[in-house]
Image (cartoon, rainbow, N blue to C red; front, top):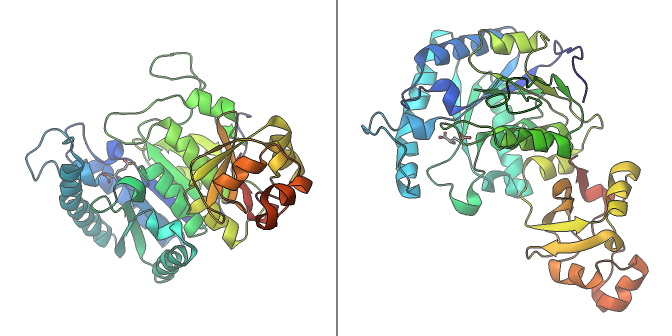
Length: 377
Ligand code: GLU
Protein backbone atom coordinates (compact mmCIF):
# COMPACT_ATOMS: atom_id res chain seq x y z
CA UNK A 1 0.00 0.00 0.00
CA UNK A 2 1.65 3.19 -1.19
CA UNK A 3 0.26 6.67 -1.49
CA UNK A 4 0.36 8.68 -4.70
CA UNK A 5 1.43 6.86 -7.86
CA UNK A 6 1.25 8.40 -11.25
CA UNK A 7 -1.83 7.30 -13.12
CA UNK A 8 -1.57 6.92 -16.84
CA UNK A 9 -5.08 6.20 -18.08
CA UNK A 10 -4.88 7.87 -21.51
CA UNK A 11 -4.65 4.56 -23.35
CA UNK A 12 -7.58 3.09 -21.43
CA UNK A 13 -10.38 2.82 -23.88
CA UNK A 14 -13.14 0.62 -22.51
CA UNK A 15 -14.44 2.04 -19.26
CA UNK A 16 -17.17 0.74 -16.97
CA UNK A 17 -18.71 3.37 -14.67
CA UNK A 18 -20.91 2.24 -11.80
CA UNK A 19 -23.20 4.69 -10.03
CA UNK A 20 -24.82 3.92 -6.73
CA UNK A 21 -28.39 4.73 -5.75
CA UNK A 22 -27.18 7.38 -3.32
CA UNK A 23 -25.45 9.21 -6.18
CA UNK A 24 -28.39 9.40 -8.57
CA UNK A 25 -31.24 9.73 -6.11
CA UNK A 26 -32.05 12.02 -3.20
CA UNK A 27 -32.63 10.84 0.36
CA UNK A 28 -36.33 10.88 -0.49
CA UNK A 29 -35.75 8.18 -3.11
CA UNK A 30 -36.59 10.63 -5.92
CA UNK A 31 -34.14 10.91 -8.79
CA UNK A 32 -31.42 13.52 -8.62
CA UNK A 33 -31.78 14.90 -12.15
CA UNK A 34 -28.90 17.35 -11.82
CA UNK A 35 -26.46 14.56 -11.00
CA UNK A 36 -27.87 12.25 -13.65
CA UNK A 37 -27.65 14.97 -16.25
CA UNK A 38 -24.10 15.77 -15.31
CA UNK A 39 -23.06 12.14 -15.41
CA UNK A 40 -24.72 11.51 -18.77
CA UNK A 41 -23.10 14.59 -20.30
CA UNK A 42 -19.69 13.44 -19.13
CA UNK A 43 -20.12 9.88 -20.38
CA UNK A 44 -21.46 11.12 -23.72
CA UNK A 45 -18.50 13.43 -24.08
CA UNK A 46 -15.99 10.67 -23.32
CA UNK A 47 -17.77 8.42 -25.83
CA UNK A 48 -17.37 11.21 -28.40
CA UNK A 49 -13.65 11.29 -27.62
CA UNK A 50 -13.41 7.66 -28.74
CA UNK A 51 -13.80 5.90 -25.41
CA UNK A 52 -16.21 2.99 -25.08
CA UNK A 53 -18.37 3.73 -22.07
CA UNK A 54 -20.49 1.20 -20.20
CA UNK A 55 -22.78 2.31 -17.39
CA UNK A 56 -23.83 0.11 -14.49
CA UNK A 57 -26.59 1.94 -12.68
CA UNK A 58 -28.33 1.08 -9.44
CA UNK A 59 -31.43 2.86 -8.31
CA UNK A 60 -34.27 0.82 -9.85
CA UNK A 61 -35.89 -0.02 -6.53
CA UNK A 62 -35.56 3.57 -5.30
CA UNK A 63 -36.92 5.00 -8.52
CA UNK A 64 -40.05 2.89 -8.11
CA UNK A 65 -40.95 4.62 -4.83
CA UNK A 66 -42.18 7.97 -6.16
CA UNK A 67 -44.63 6.66 -8.81
CA UNK A 68 -46.15 4.38 -6.17
CA UNK A 69 -46.32 7.18 -3.57
CA UNK A 70 -44.08 5.35 -1.10
CA UNK A 71 -41.68 7.22 1.12
CA UNK A 72 -39.85 4.11 2.37
CA UNK A 73 -38.48 1.02 0.68
CA UNK A 74 -40.84 -1.88 1.39
CA UNK A 75 -39.50 -4.83 3.38
CA UNK A 76 -40.88 -7.80 1.48
CA UNK A 77 -38.96 -9.21 -1.44
CA UNK A 78 -42.08 -9.35 -3.62
CA UNK A 79 -42.82 -5.66 -3.13
CA UNK A 80 -39.18 -4.81 -3.84
CA UNK A 81 -39.44 -6.83 -7.05
CA UNK A 82 -42.56 -4.88 -8.02
CA UNK A 83 -40.82 -1.60 -7.22
CA UNK A 84 -37.82 -2.57 -9.32
CA UNK A 85 -40.12 -3.39 -12.24
CA UNK A 86 -41.59 0.12 -12.10
CA UNK A 87 -38.33 1.87 -11.23
CA UNK A 88 -36.18 0.25 -13.90
CA UNK A 89 -38.51 1.74 -16.51
CA UNK A 90 -38.33 5.17 -14.89
CA UNK A 91 -34.55 4.95 -14.73
CA UNK A 92 -34.14 3.88 -18.34
CA UNK A 93 -36.60 6.46 -19.59
CA UNK A 94 -34.58 9.17 -17.88
CA UNK A 95 -31.22 7.88 -19.10
CA UNK A 96 -32.50 7.35 -22.63
CA UNK A 97 -33.88 10.89 -22.82
CA UNK A 98 -30.71 12.46 -21.44
CA UNK A 99 -28.30 10.42 -23.58
CA UNK A 100 -30.40 11.13 -26.68
CA UNK A 101 -30.00 14.85 -26.08
CA UNK A 102 -26.25 14.30 -26.38
CA UNK A 103 -26.56 12.17 -29.50
CA UNK A 104 -25.96 8.78 -27.90
CA UNK A 105 -27.87 5.54 -28.26
CA UNK A 106 -28.25 3.42 -25.15
CA UNK A 107 -29.35 -0.18 -24.63
CA UNK A 108 -30.70 -1.78 -21.48
CA UNK A 109 -29.04 -4.97 -20.23
CA UNK A 110 -30.45 -6.73 -17.17
CA UNK A 111 -28.30 -9.55 -15.82
CA UNK A 112 -28.64 -12.25 -13.20
CA UNK A 113 -26.01 -14.52 -11.79
CA UNK A 114 -27.26 -17.28 -14.08
CA UNK A 115 -26.15 -15.29 -17.11
CA UNK A 116 -22.55 -15.74 -16.19
CA UNK A 117 -22.67 -18.95 -14.20
CA UNK A 118 -21.98 -21.40 -16.97
CA UNK A 119 -19.52 -20.86 -19.76
CA UNK A 120 -22.01 -20.78 -22.61
CA UNK A 121 -24.29 -18.20 -20.96
CA UNK A 122 -21.23 -16.18 -20.08
CA UNK A 123 -20.15 -16.23 -23.73
CA UNK A 124 -23.65 -15.24 -24.95
CA UNK A 125 -23.82 -12.27 -22.57
CA UNK A 126 -20.28 -11.32 -23.56
CA UNK A 127 -21.06 -11.47 -27.29
CA UNK A 128 -24.19 -9.37 -26.89
CA UNK A 129 -22.36 -6.70 -24.92
CA UNK A 130 -19.34 -6.64 -27.24
CA UNK A 131 -21.63 -6.27 -30.25
CA UNK A 132 -23.42 -3.34 -28.62
CA UNK A 133 -20.06 -1.71 -27.88
CA UNK A 134 -18.93 -2.27 -31.49
CA UNK A 135 -22.13 -0.63 -32.73
CA UNK A 136 -21.41 2.45 -30.61
CA UNK A 137 -24.28 1.74 -28.20
CA UNK A 138 -23.73 2.63 -24.54
CA UNK A 139 -24.94 -0.37 -22.50
CA UNK A 140 -26.79 0.54 -19.31
CA UNK A 141 -26.66 -2.43 -17.01
CA UNK A 142 -28.45 -3.39 -13.83
CA UNK A 143 -29.21 -6.61 -12.09
CA UNK A 144 -32.58 -8.03 -13.13
CA UNK A 145 -34.05 -7.35 -9.70
CA UNK A 146 -37.54 -8.42 -10.74
CA UNK A 147 -36.60 -12.05 -11.27
CA UNK A 148 -33.28 -12.38 -9.48
CA UNK A 149 -33.85 -13.54 -5.94
CA UNK A 150 -32.02 -15.93 -3.65
CA UNK A 151 -29.29 -17.91 -5.36
CA UNK A 152 -29.86 -16.13 -8.69
CA UNK A 153 -29.01 -12.82 -7.15
CA UNK A 154 -25.64 -11.14 -7.38
CA UNK A 155 -26.93 -8.83 -4.68
CA UNK A 156 -25.00 -5.62 -5.14
CA UNK A 157 -23.96 -3.60 -8.13
CA UNK A 158 -20.36 -3.21 -6.97
CA UNK A 159 -19.90 -6.94 -7.58
CA UNK A 160 -22.04 -6.79 -10.73
CA UNK A 161 -19.90 -4.02 -12.21
CA UNK A 162 -16.69 -5.95 -11.47
CA UNK A 163 -18.18 -9.01 -13.17
CA UNK A 164 -19.22 -6.90 -16.14
CA UNK A 165 -15.71 -5.44 -16.40
CA UNK A 166 -14.29 -8.95 -16.74
CA UNK A 167 -17.07 -9.91 -19.13
CA UNK A 168 -16.30 -7.12 -21.62
CA UNK A 169 -12.49 -6.98 -21.12
CA UNK A 170 -12.74 -3.43 -19.75
CA UNK A 171 -9.57 -1.45 -19.11
CA UNK A 172 -10.89 0.51 -16.17
CA UNK A 173 -13.76 0.30 -13.68
CA UNK A 174 -14.86 3.44 -11.85
CA UNK A 175 -17.15 3.06 -8.83
CA UNK A 176 -18.90 6.34 -8.07
CA UNK A 177 -20.16 6.42 -4.55
CA UNK A 178 -21.16 8.74 -1.71
CA UNK A 179 -17.71 8.17 -0.24
CA UNK A 180 -14.67 9.46 -2.13
CA UNK A 181 -12.37 6.50 -1.63
CA UNK A 182 -10.94 4.04 0.84
CA UNK A 183 -9.78 5.67 4.07
CA UNK A 184 -7.29 4.52 6.68
CA UNK A 185 -10.25 4.51 9.08
CA UNK A 186 -13.98 5.25 8.89
CA UNK A 187 -13.98 9.00 8.04
CA UNK A 188 -17.50 9.41 9.44
CA UNK A 189 -16.29 8.55 12.92
CA UNK A 190 -12.53 9.31 12.73
CA UNK A 191 -11.68 12.86 11.72
CA UNK A 192 -7.99 12.01 11.32
CA UNK A 193 -8.68 9.28 8.71
CA UNK A 194 -6.77 9.76 5.46
CA UNK A 195 -7.65 8.64 1.97
CA UNK A 196 -5.50 5.85 0.51
CA UNK A 197 -4.66 6.79 -3.04
CA UNK A 198 -3.15 3.52 -4.26
CA UNK A 199 -3.63 -0.12 -3.35
CA UNK A 200 -1.58 -2.74 -5.16
CA UNK A 201 -2.45 -5.68 -2.97
CA UNK A 202 -5.83 -6.39 -1.44
CA UNK A 203 -4.83 -8.06 1.79
CA UNK A 204 -6.57 -8.65 5.11
CA UNK A 205 -5.60 -5.18 6.32
CA UNK A 206 -7.53 -3.61 3.41
CA UNK A 207 -10.65 -5.64 4.26
CA UNK A 208 -10.25 -4.72 7.93
CA UNK A 209 -10.16 -0.99 7.31
CA UNK A 210 -13.06 -1.24 4.85
CA UNK A 211 -15.15 -2.28 7.87
CA UNK A 212 -18.81 -1.74 7.29
CA UNK A 213 -18.85 1.87 6.09
CA UNK A 214 -21.84 2.46 3.85
CA UNK A 215 -25.01 4.44 3.37
CA UNK A 216 -28.72 3.92 3.90
CA UNK A 217 -29.69 4.17 0.23
CA UNK A 218 -27.28 1.80 -1.46
CA UNK A 219 -26.82 -1.92 -1.00
CA UNK A 220 -23.04 -2.10 -0.98
CA UNK A 221 -20.76 -0.65 1.67
CA UNK A 222 -17.01 -0.32 1.41
CA UNK A 223 -16.68 -4.07 1.98
CA UNK A 224 -18.48 -4.97 -1.27
CA UNK A 225 -16.31 -2.42 -3.06
CA UNK A 226 -13.17 -4.19 -1.89
CA UNK A 227 -14.66 -7.50 -3.00
CA UNK A 228 -15.38 -5.89 -6.36
CA UNK A 229 -11.78 -4.67 -6.50
CA UNK A 230 -10.57 -8.23 -5.87
CA UNK A 231 -12.65 -9.51 -8.81
CA UNK A 232 -11.74 -6.62 -11.13
CA UNK A 233 -8.01 -6.63 -10.42
CA UNK A 234 -7.83 -10.43 -10.77
CA UNK A 235 -9.45 -9.98 -14.21
CA UNK A 236 -6.74 -7.43 -15.19
CA UNK A 237 -8.96 -4.38 -14.70
CA UNK A 238 -7.80 -1.30 -12.76
CA UNK A 239 -10.49 0.01 -10.43
CA UNK A 240 -11.01 3.45 -8.92
CA UNK A 241 -13.42 4.34 -6.11
CA UNK A 242 -14.36 8.02 -6.17
CA UNK A 243 -17.06 10.44 -5.13
CA UNK A 244 -20.10 10.62 -7.39
CA UNK A 245 -20.86 14.16 -6.24
CA UNK A 246 -17.66 15.80 -7.50
CA UNK A 247 -17.80 17.70 -10.76
CA UNK A 248 -16.26 16.10 -13.85
CA UNK A 249 -15.05 13.20 -11.77
CA UNK A 250 -15.09 10.57 -14.55
CA UNK A 251 -13.16 12.77 -17.00
CA UNK A 252 -10.69 13.75 -14.31
CA UNK A 253 -10.04 10.10 -13.47
CA UNK A 254 -9.67 9.27 -17.16
CA UNK A 255 -7.19 12.15 -17.48
CA UNK A 256 -5.07 10.52 -14.78
CA UNK A 257 -5.86 12.87 -11.89
CA UNK A 258 -4.98 11.43 -8.51
CA UNK A 259 -8.47 11.31 -6.99
CA UNK A 260 -10.14 8.56 -5.01
CA UNK A 261 -8.50 5.18 -4.48
CA UNK A 262 -6.90 3.21 -7.31
CA UNK A 263 -6.70 -0.58 -7.05
CA UNK A 264 -4.06 -1.76 -9.48
CA UNK A 265 -4.84 -4.68 -11.80
CA UNK A 266 -2.74 -7.81 -11.47
CA UNK A 267 -0.22 -7.83 -14.26
CA UNK A 268 -0.41 -11.34 -15.63
CA UNK A 269 -3.08 -11.52 -18.36
CA UNK A 270 -5.69 -14.23 -17.77
CA UNK A 271 -6.95 -16.36 -20.58
CA UNK A 272 -10.66 -16.59 -21.16
CA UNK A 273 -11.46 -19.54 -18.90
CA UNK A 274 -9.78 -17.90 -15.95
CA UNK A 275 -11.51 -14.60 -16.64
CA UNK A 276 -14.81 -16.42 -16.50
CA UNK A 277 -13.76 -18.05 -13.25
CA UNK A 278 -13.27 -14.73 -11.52
CA UNK A 279 -15.83 -12.63 -13.35
CA UNK A 280 -18.77 -14.92 -13.67
CA UNK A 281 -18.88 -17.84 -11.43
CA UNK A 282 -20.14 -18.31 -7.92
CA UNK A 283 -18.28 -20.67 -5.63
CA UNK A 284 -20.42 -23.51 -4.30
CA UNK A 285 -18.07 -24.44 -1.48
CA UNK A 286 -14.96 -23.48 0.42
CA UNK A 287 -11.64 -25.20 0.98
CA UNK A 288 -9.84 -23.99 4.07
CA UNK A 289 -6.07 -24.22 3.76
CA UNK A 290 -3.02 -23.91 6.00
CA UNK A 291 -0.21 -21.38 5.79
CA UNK A 292 2.13 -23.67 3.80
CA UNK A 293 -0.56 -24.17 1.19
CA UNK A 294 -1.33 -20.45 1.06
CA UNK A 295 2.36 -19.65 0.47
CA UNK A 296 2.66 -22.34 -2.20
CA UNK A 297 -0.34 -20.94 -4.09
CA UNK A 298 0.42 -17.25 -3.70
CA UNK A 299 4.20 -17.27 -3.84
CA UNK A 300 5.20 -20.33 -5.82
CA UNK A 301 2.32 -20.62 -8.30
CA UNK A 302 1.54 -24.17 -7.15
CA UNK A 303 -1.60 -26.25 -7.63
CA UNK A 304 -3.78 -26.94 -4.59
CA UNK A 305 -2.80 -30.29 -3.07
CA UNK A 306 -4.82 -32.19 -0.47
CA UNK A 307 -2.03 -32.00 2.10
CA UNK A 308 -2.63 -28.29 2.72
CA UNK A 309 -6.41 -28.56 3.15
CA UNK A 310 -7.63 -28.29 6.73
CA UNK A 311 -11.38 -28.06 6.22
CA UNK A 312 -14.21 -28.27 3.68
CA UNK A 313 -17.37 -26.16 3.77
CA UNK A 314 -20.51 -26.72 1.69
CA UNK A 315 -21.56 -29.63 -0.47
CA UNK A 316 -20.19 -29.68 -3.99
CA UNK A 317 -19.32 -32.12 -6.73
CA UNK A 318 -16.24 -32.60 -8.89
CA UNK A 319 -16.05 -29.88 -11.53
CA UNK A 320 -17.74 -27.32 -9.27
CA UNK A 321 -16.18 -23.96 -8.49
CA UNK A 322 -14.87 -23.48 -4.98
CA UNK A 323 -13.07 -20.74 -3.14
CA UNK A 324 -9.79 -21.33 -1.36
CA UNK A 325 -9.78 -19.64 2.02
CA UNK A 326 -6.88 -18.88 4.35
CA UNK A 327 -7.45 -17.09 7.64
CA UNK A 328 -11.01 -16.08 6.70
CA UNK A 329 -10.02 -14.54 3.36
CA UNK A 330 -10.61 -15.92 -0.14
CA UNK A 331 -7.16 -16.17 -1.68
CA UNK A 332 -8.14 -18.05 -4.85
CA UNK A 333 -11.00 -19.58 -6.80
CA UNK A 334 -10.87 -22.67 -8.93
CA UNK A 335 -12.48 -25.77 -10.42
CA UNK A 336 -12.26 -28.70 -8.04
CA UNK A 337 -11.18 -32.12 -9.30
CA UNK A 338 -12.97 -33.76 -6.37
CA UNK A 339 -16.34 -33.36 -4.66
CA UNK A 340 -16.62 -32.30 -1.02
CA UNK A 341 -17.13 -35.85 0.29
CA UNK A 342 -13.92 -37.09 -1.30
CA UNK A 343 -11.96 -34.03 -0.23
CA UNK A 344 -13.01 -34.65 3.35
CA UNK A 345 -11.47 -38.10 3.03
CA UNK A 346 -8.16 -36.94 1.56
CA UNK A 347 -7.63 -33.57 3.26
CA UNK A 348 -4.33 -33.30 5.09
CA UNK A 349 -2.94 -36.33 3.23
CA UNK A 350 -0.17 -36.63 0.67
CA UNK A 351 -1.14 -36.92 -3.00
CA UNK A 352 0.58 -40.31 -3.12
CA UNK A 353 -2.06 -41.65 -0.69
CA UNK A 354 -5.08 -40.50 -2.73
CA UNK A 355 -5.42 -43.66 -4.79
CA UNK A 356 -5.29 -45.84 -1.66
CA UNK A 357 -8.00 -43.78 0.06
CA UNK A 358 -10.36 -43.22 -2.86
CA UNK A 359 -9.62 -46.26 -5.00
CA UNK A 360 -10.55 -45.77 -8.65
CA UNK A 361 -11.95 -42.30 -7.83
CA UNK A 362 -8.52 -41.02 -6.91
CA UNK A 363 -7.14 -40.15 -10.31
CA UNK A 364 -5.85 -36.61 -9.74
CA UNK A 365 -2.81 -35.59 -7.68
CA UNK A 366 -4.16 -32.07 -7.21
CA UNK A 367 -7.49 -30.99 -5.76
CA UNK A 368 -7.32 -27.92 -8.01
CA UNK A 369 -4.84 -27.82 -10.85
CA UNK A 370 -3.00 -24.55 -11.31
CA UNK A 371 -4.52 -24.08 -14.78
CA UNK A 372 -7.95 -24.02 -13.17
CA UNK A 373 -6.98 -21.76 -10.28
CA UNK A 374 -7.14 -17.97 -10.14
CA UNK A 375 -5.42 -16.07 -7.38
CA UNK A 376 -7.70 -13.40 -5.89
CA UNK A 377 -5.30 -11.81 -3.47
N1 GLU B 1 -29.92 -3.40 -8.42
C1 GLU B 1 -30.34 -2.57 -7.34
C2 GLU B 1 -31.27 -1.46 -7.85
O1 GLU B 1 -31.14 -1.03 -8.96
C3 GLU B 1 -29.22 -1.88 -6.63
C4 GLU B 1 -28.14 -2.74 -6.06
C5 GLU B 1 -27.10 -1.87 -5.37
O2 GLU B 1 -27.43 -0.78 -4.87
O3 GLU B 1 -25.92 -2.25 -5.31
O4 GLU B 1 -32.12 -1.01 -7.13
